[in-house]
Image (cartoon, rainbow, N blue to C red):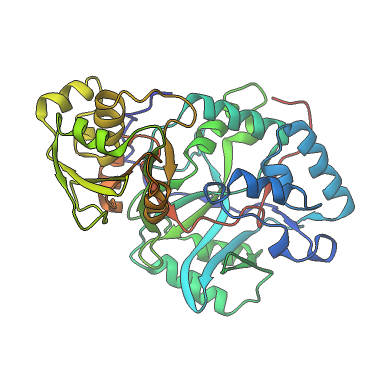
Length: 413
């Protein structure tokens, strides 16, 4: 799906986050929450996901099921047996993550209209792949549940974050879990007046930026266009105030197992300035890419204008300055002629892991990208320009299965 440009939404104002009756684990039946919740999708290896699916009540049994209709039956059985329970009152949920005493993020979970007249203004910033959207739509439609919220970031000037902090300090938590050293806390707000207090002014300064969940959003919108697709007009969403608890923003690096690093550097010198880095790989500076592999490292800067124009033909002008676009289009596709096949390019979120993966002779080439800025991403999004897929990684992402949106069972859309 080619969505490199989308209509600008600068003129649209506030976002409405609506209360709903969430489905949550009952620890009395399911056991400790820490043993049944899942880290974010991007943080789970296939082997880890398979191991978690062996646990009787683990959310991975629904999230990674190859047969979503079978997973829907499992979900129904968990509801019947009380492993999962639907909250009796429409609620909003205050959610935070901590690493030891340090607050990583605090936000609010609710339902967000994503299509129709009541759709909240949301700025996507990355392109999506058609086959992934089809897969996500099939899984959502078969399971009839949203197990993890879209992650949105907005800037309120700090007021929204202070309201959440004040409210949470005066109310008891309803759930807590610990995953990979991070503690997850949840509060439930059922009072309509307090819900209004928590959500007043959301997105009034700037339209929320979609930090994570582009394929899930596209899948929900696709389902909403079908006959009977009314339930998909809303999506589970977590809204975080970046003025109070800014999300961590990292690049996503590229690993090419079948490309010899020294040959990659020599070929790249034909379309850009390439310099050896005798001290080894390091984090790239703005406007720079760093290649690593076979014990060597190289800096790549200053792409040749003619080569860049040819590689970016038909694409947004703004892509010429985007490291992910330069990597994918100029180097991987045009210069190195790497085929678009499974396993040819691996996306890695951690630079050290990418470098370690190519430390052995002949293990391939790692391309390290510089850290982007939220303002730069937002500026492009407000112009209606989407970045290439797998350009950025916002975090920390919410735990999967802590708060779920489960739709009524009836004939599939």
